[in-house]
Picture 1 (tube, helix red, strand yellow):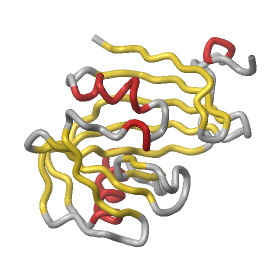
Picture 2 (picture 1 turned 90 degrees about the vertical axis):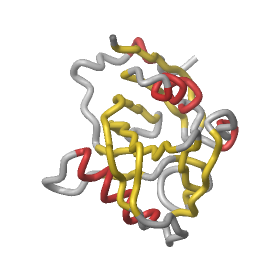
Picture 3 (picture 1 turned 135 degrees about the vertical axis):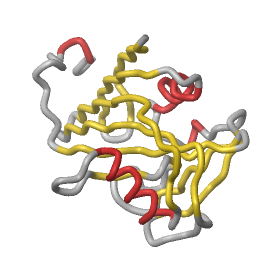
Picture 4 (picture 1 turned 120 degrees about the vertical axis):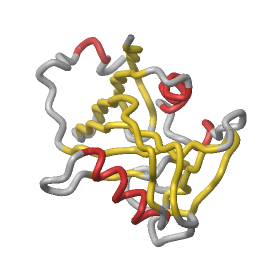
Amino acid sequence: MGLTVNQIDWSVWQPQQRATLLFVIKNGSMLLIHKKRGLGAGKINAPGGRLESGETSLEAAIRETREELGIEALDVSYCGDLSFQFLAGLTLFCQVFKARDYRGDPHDTSEATPLWVSLENIPYERMWQDDRYWLPVMLKDQHFKGYFIFDQDRMLDYRLDILH
């Protein structure tokens, strides 16, 4: 069966890397990216990436969105936390944000190609497997904590806590 979410003591679990995701949601659509390189290359995701030294998660989310799409995210709010344990050893903690507006014109960069999708037609089959569980919660403006076990890009187990 392999490792399960319940076999990890998440209260003492420590991530090797900290990252962010930022979803721009406006007029019934969501701005996603087709990721060109790095973890998840080839998948559809939100802009985001690893924190730099001395940077808050919010600062990193806004910076990564600017670097990947050339836009400035506006009216940004915190949505939830994602903890990932990969069987190969990588541990990753990700904070998720959403923006209700932006300034600039999203454009192709060396890291990503922008992709607007309708909120009714999110391409989950081209995204990380965990997204289909927590993304609908985020879209309902509910906060969450998600815990996931992955073997490369295949999800083996998860737990999603919706916070009230």
